[in-house]
Length: 270
Length: 270
Image 1: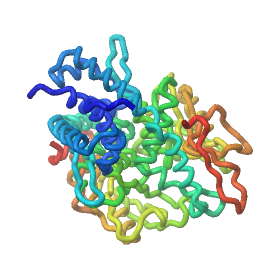
Image 2: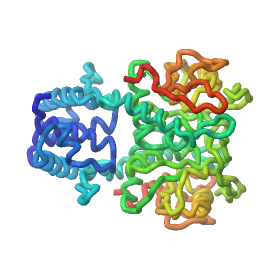
Image 3: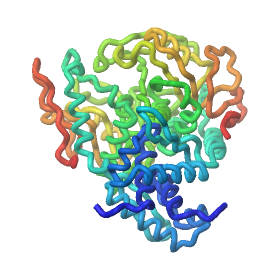
Image 4: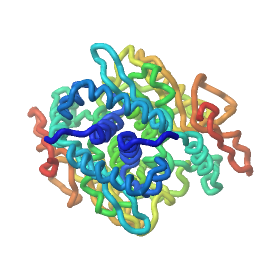
């Protein structure tokens, strides 16, 4: 292979690092890939780090120690995090999204790749140092955002089900009180998580936190602690709040019959 | 802002293009971002295209015409597509994954960010020119892979549900015969897709194709045609095949009582 120029090395390193967020690559990996000296790769990394920071495209970090190397962490969305979330809020306030019974249609947004990637990146940015071993969500609508969060954090996604499935092996089942006041059940395969791990709970919507409370209880059954709870959208002042310490990307004002919905970005979105 | 060097431009362009696969960026976008002449940006793109090709990291394509510009399409996984799929096969053949009743536990792999990203990239690479307007899957296990496929293709993901949900508005319901011989139902919000669109169906497992057949029937109700069908894993010689023309990443030999499972990469994986 011809000698590879710095230009080319930077492009390849960017692709490799950003495609596997939060994964640590050794310097030797890049030295071998490019047949280049460590000093050149170190300089490449320095340039890359400064450039990503300058354009607010995430952090390139050098990790020291035996398992050291370089990793990429997506943080925000360049300079446009707040605009991005405001754009989502504007879409949620479209009148045709209001359904009978005070429900809001946003399944479409929750499965749009660019939207969920942005949301997942913003959520992950809040929890890099929380020590989560996995992201937990409850089927179905929150799965895409939870997956993108897990992807940025480089941890597995664990999906709790409404009922035990034969193809998941033996499972733990619990009952919980949903935000709507119904008793519902939640199941998770016994082999899905390990005692002593930490869970980051990500879900699409919080009315009063009933489902999230259920997920916290489910984690207790597995002796797993909770590193954080984050929603895409949360009711700002629920009448019966069942959890605390949660975050949300967007906040929904109280739903009043006949009045248009009001949705705004959470204060931590900058 | 200081003048931005080619090194830095290449790193930033790589991050921006690869973070939004299949999205066309105008040359002016990058000229404005870098305050640089079009000729420089064109040269940057040429270097980037050659570099990505040399390292088999995907294609950087120039699109001509009024809506023209440059886009990035992830294609394979560098030189390691086959190794990647073989690694998944090896994991699926682990004896502890075999469950009573001939079921296979692979929910964990189907929700691992790096695994589903790789699978989605490989699947998308087969359908860039199929003209799919969206990816369709049936809840729950196929959602992560389907999302990553949709992300690479830059089209929405549409999730069919087992039953109508109030928060999805009015829906179309159908009944279908599952691979296990049960009558099951499938529902999709009326507003999710539009007449005349094309669907790429992605799902986790094909036993006989019953669920996929159901998705094809569901699409007929919406006057949507099918651009392709792809599974993560498919039974190689099903007794009662309900669909045709499907692809799969991995093929499962006939399941025989008491014998270990045999799973191999499909021939098209190179």
